[in-house]
Image (cartoon, rainbow, N blue to C red; front, top):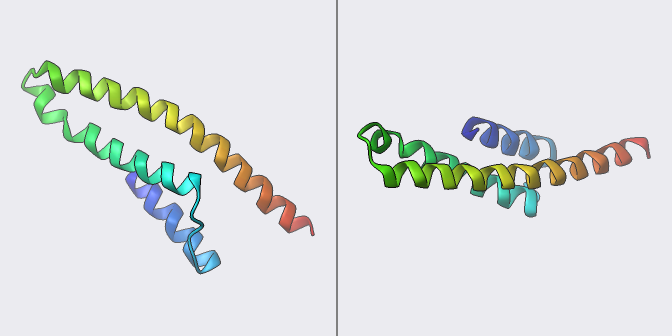
Length: 87
């Protein structure tokens, strides 16, 4: 996911010469931070730390909700691109 975020930002910048500041970008960056934090809990979970397991679960539930938001805003972006192509 981290590589996908960086790739998406790179392609947007290459195609447009700028990044578009909006909910899709902000939520995507937030999700990237949550994914990295969730993954960083693995060593603690391997040692049997229950707090790490519960935190991991909560972060991933939050990520699932944010992914839904990303899907909605992403489809809106695709629709705008398609509308501009037909003009």
